[in-house]
Amino acid sequence: MKTRIENTADVSKFYELLKDAKGKAMSVVNTVDTVGCPEGFTYINESIYSAEVPVPCPAMFGCECKDNCGKDCECSHPCNYDQYGLLKKDAAPQLVECGPKCACSDKCLNRLVQKGSNVEFELRRFVGKGWGVVTKQKLKRGTFVAEYVGEVISNDEGNQRGHKDMAQGMSYMFDLDSEFTGEVADFTIDAKTHGNISAFFNHSCDPNMKACSVYIEHRDPRLHHLAFFATRNVMAGEELAFDYSPSREEGKLTTTCHCGARKCRKTMSF
Image 1 (tube, helix red, strand yellow):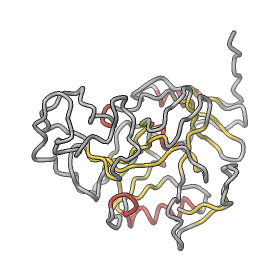
Image 2: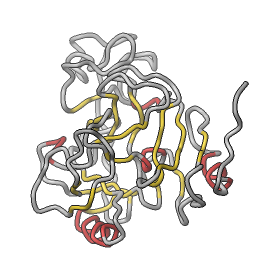
Image 3: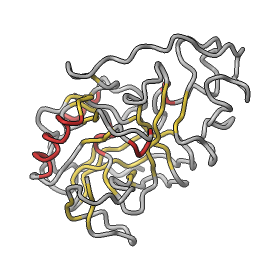
Image 4: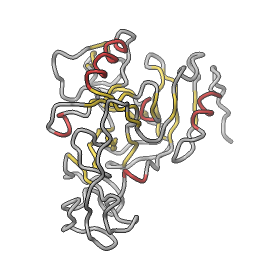
């Protein structure tokens, strides 16, 4: 017999937001305080572009493979996903999936992130950390968890917004930068007011996910997709988290870390 969870906050607005979310149904749990849905947050399934950001030109060509793409595919060289749809250990740092111009079918192994997440999530309130995300199922290492989506803005605008957010001890900015493409960031994804479940992923100094750059409809290195993959096997009921500052760059804004990991660095940078 399942025990009924009594929420201490009104989470009805969350469920109203989540009704249009793609993927498996999500649950919302808050037994910590009376904080409900963030004001002004809109749930989106794909990133939106601000007026100052150029919409990428679609790829002009695609592979000519039949059915599943092999080692000679022009897109993957070879596929970065295995036969079970898991990211390979030796996967390239930049993942190129087959796109709209490719001849292969939608069953091709090299079409993963574009199909969306198949993970069952629970949005949960944590003591000292606020909202976070828990997986309700076991995940194998290499599982695609979710794409980071939000409002794509210029890096200059992102810096301005980021300073304001940090004054409140939070940040939802994710630079499309050199950490993934080798280029200086021109653009940033801001998930503060527009985002999906990934907007609620917390930081951990001992993470179980990592972000990878993914190219699908185009090859513009400034505006790639960002996809989270499990870096180890994850148990059902475990919080999903990634390292907000894996490069340990100096000169960034810092704040106190509350991740609770044994390897906690006590501070995190943005």
